[in-house]
Amino acid sequence: MTAATLPAVRGRLTAHAPLAPLVWFKSGGAAQWLFEPADADDLSAFLRDLDPAVPVMALGLGSNLIVRDGGVPGVVVRLGKPFATAAALDSSTLRCGGGASGILVSSTARDAGVAGLEFLRSIPGTVGGFVRMNGGAYGRETADVLVEAEVVMRDGARRTLPVANLRYTYRHSDLPAGAVVIGATFRGTPGAPDAIQAEMDRIAAAREASQPLRSKTGGSTFKNPDGHKAWQLVDAAGCRGMTLGGAQVSEKHTNFLLNTGTATSGEIEALGETVRKRVKAASGIELEWEIQRVGVPA
Image 1 (cartoon, rainbow, N blue to C red):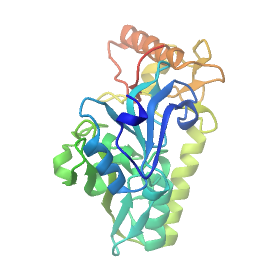
Image 2: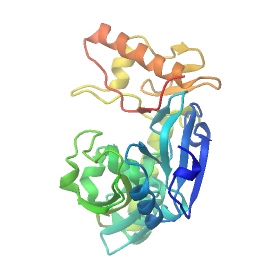
Image 3: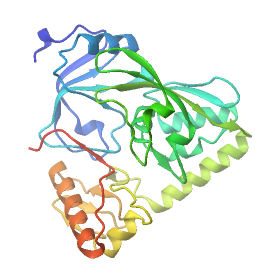
Image 4: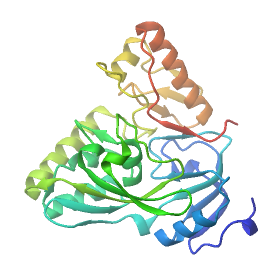
């Protein structure tokens, strides 16, 4: 797949683009091609004309992601500033671009007096990631506030999907493979900006106190099994602080893996698998990855 065989674009296409700088773990290989579309029409036309056999993956802030060291084949789509938008439609509804961060969404909601979206302040991702993964924290999740999502399908068609079509479960949606979320409508309830800010501050303080935010990490590593907290299972299995190469289980929050500075993605993933085995041996419970692992090993 060469530049000559790819569709023409108005945005930016980069061959062999390093992905490590774009993800929180700061590890991993390159994208065969990285596409940063100029706008939704640019993305739609590109996917329409792209060989259907070429895999496509969307990348947000890279917080919930291990990019394997061999890189990602095909095209990685990264939504930049043209998609980092958020605006109130009325006293309870927001329209947001797929590249908008949780901080932008929650801050826009606060300014517009829309309550109920404060929890998005604590999720280090974008609207696209929230929609795909049913992102959630502090007792709420995307399924509770999403009205509909606008997506560009792998064939370039634009569709609006009501929340029911995504069939949300815990950290999962039925969003079609290769689809890119370019926008979403969220609904909260009318509220006082001061009270909304106070709730955002409470969430931010709780997160700061309990999570290793100033480290190279990927957020919550494993899903919470029914009736259990993943971090408690990891801790009970004796994994707190465990290391493998440059990767470490966080001492502060045992459901976080860290890159202490030199870790490869292979080491981070292998450490996670070691933790899963130890938890299974100690408790009989098989932890499921919450972090997405993409690409090919070195």
